[in-house]
Amino acid sequence: MSAASTVPDETPHVETRPEPPTRPGHPWSGIGLALFGAIAFSGKAIIVKLGYRLGADAITLLALRMLVALPFFALMAWWVRRDTQRFRLRGGDRWKVVGLGFSGYYLASFLDFAGLQYITATLERLILYLTPTLVLLIGVVLFRRKPAGRQLLALAISYLGVALAFGHDLETGGDGIALGGVLVFLSALSYASYLVGSGEVVARVGAVRLTAYASAVAACFCLLHFMIVRPWHSLFGQPADVYWLSLLNGTVCTVLPVLATMMAVQRLGSALASQIGMVGPVSTIVMSLLILGEPMGPWQVAGTVMVMLGVFVVTRPRPG
Image 1 (spheres, rainbow, N blue to C red):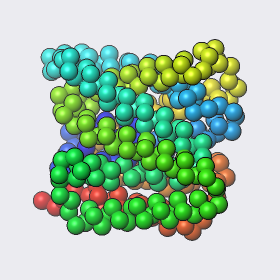
Image 2 (cartoon, rainbow, N blue to C red):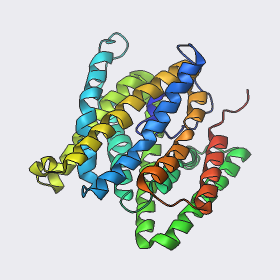
Image 3 (cartoon, rainbow, N blue to C red):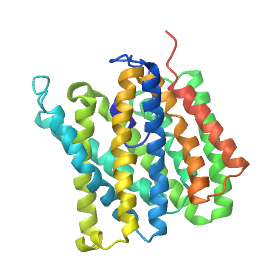
Image 4 (cartoon, rainbow, N blue to C red):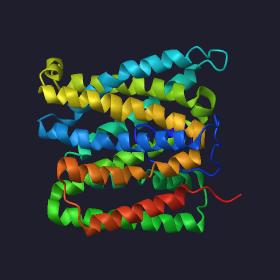
């Protein structure tokens, strides 16, 4: 798993040969960075839900998030650009970066934000956590990879867990739950497609460079989308609290966890950093209860446990 595969959400990546640490240091620093990255990423859904309560819509919140994060990613791109000896972007790679930015950073984020209008932050996080299983299924369908028995068991456990939580919310929340669930599932599928397609490009371009370039591309798509569907001046007519939330979303819940997760992967290796990142759904549940006041019953708890168990099995490296 590359560091880029944990962005924009802390979903772990399916891997058969996990990367070892490249910058060994004190393990507690890596663990702390991985925990911070997972918890900070999970706060994104909470901030978006708060923005909806203030009257903002999905594309506005997404455009503001990207406006805040773009200067930081541009700085990151400038920083890694100094390593011009390693690899120069070819024409074909430029188009691949554009495609990856569209699917993994723009489309996945927009569908996620749109789905959050209808479902709870907890259910959103559970559906997004199916991303590793979707990576596995894409490999089976497109590349004829034969899944191991434990992976099939993990798929069954994960999807049964989501079905438990989703079924309960569907009974109590109405038709909007179904629409929101589909939108977030498509977000997870879009990001899974990014993970599948990014492996070759990451190997040549580098994780930090790809993250910076693809994020800049996504920001352009988000702003273009906003200008097509909304008057430009409306971006600056939101309540003051929306801007404070967007500042928090673009920095603490986007840029900082990206850097923290990359540093954690360098210190711990991708396998351990990925497993620590599984604290994300738990932190989302806690924040949704304390900040949003969203209900959390036994079905949601059972579904959360099952999804996390299934993802743990899918992402656990094969012995040997």
